[in-house]
Length: 157
Length: 425
Ligand SMILES: Cc1cc2nc3c(=O)[nH]c(=O)nc-3n(C[C@H](O)[C@H](O)[C@H](O)COP(=O)(O)O)c2cc1C
Ligand code: SF4
Ligand code: FES
Image (cartoon, rainbow over all chains, first blue to last red):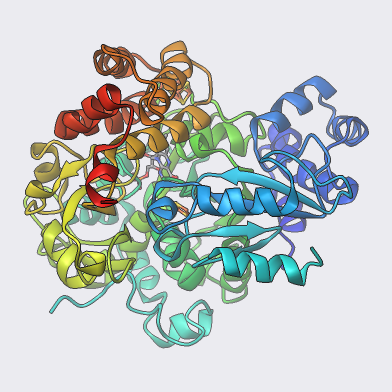
């Protein structure tokens, strides 16, 4: 069983049944996000119905966490670390500005074709091998402008 | 030569596998622990002098002793793998490369406090870490180290992994419990402490994974061995994450009490490109900055406090002479402003105010009096907030001004950077 969501959903133990449903909320939001691509109002409502929590509460909880997307993002979600260690290693703004220029979007935006979105993030716990960026689930270390170009070329941009 | 303890296996091939762990003496400590009584185990942890590695340094054995003794009350161990403090990358490495060591620590802790349930909370971004946790737990079940009647001892323990979803504050123990319950990660008011009222209202022992990883070794080799490493008040091995302007950034496991200078110069290969050292953040982004003339300090809780900083998570961030300290303070302030959970006003408003002030100074728009306003704002946050984040966010700006005030003054007066003026000519 390698699937984190399946693991979490099956994990809620006997003895604390009263709390069980609510405790599954983050796992349920991950499932919904996977299915819908983002947490659309429809996805939020489905989670709310399943767990018998109000849609408002689900929305409010989801909005607390940056990994839950309440707006559709790009097919490739690019995150650039602006943490202090990555900055000292030559990362942060030089890399952010480069991606921004190349994709013609600002941080927080998605390209019109829906292919790429850019986000600036704090520390990916890769500080010893920074600058670090992430594209979807993959983290890249020792990133340079050239390496970003190579990665984006490979993704067809 | 110091022999690594916590990282002794991580360079072996397939170090994450249960077979590798078992081949090198893994899970022997559980057997040994079961031969003693829970009280004896708690006593050993107390005598070892082990203090929490999650940042606050609270004595582990004392915390175990706070757990209610009543056997009828279900108890929980909550395992903190939320590592998000900029500069810190030790937990990610140990969970990816030696998760069984942590599970063994959890089993022993659960035995000592009488817990039947363990919840792992892991940072949502740790994709490999999640997989390693899940696989390791499944293998531990298969080998009879988790589940019912563990190794015939009569003890039962269930363990599962739960992912956070991107919020630094969820590393704070009560916020982590809220998040595990499926809520927004707002810290809870203490007391009651988690040892009384924790996850689902049940008494809960919360530990950082590096703390838990120390447990099997304390049981195996004895508390006296552990207490023989380190200083008066800081015992045992510690993983130091070194980043920034050094030749060999990385995680280094060394005895507590080692000098900060030795970590930088010998283990991390010295400052990069032959440059001079300017400043160090010794314990992760929330600990005060130390100037270069204070790096002969031993890396221990008490000595760093005396030197005007904190051991924190032991994440050493090294800055050379070309670093602008206004920019460092600005960047750290931005981090905290972004991560404030918004629950209390001094932190919510103060963190943004600090960032705005530092941002305008950095960009040549500072005004006379801004430095005083920053100090007033920082002092108005520290001590007045719901959780320790308030104190944490006041640290970088305050310490940067304390040690490098002339750089702030130059930025305001000349609308430009002193360091740049010196190093770009
Ligand atoms: C803002 C904030 C963030 C924290 N983040 C973490 C974290 O990511 N990991 C961790 O183990 N402890 C973190 N802590 C410390 C925990 O609250 C708690 O003290 C720790 O998990 C207890 O374990 P220990 O006794 O083993 O250190 C954080 C504390 C604060 C105030
Ligand atoms: S101090 Fe900051 S992070 Fe802590 S509870 Fe208050 S607002 Fe939230
Ligand atoms: S600061 Fe970028 S990964 Fe930690």
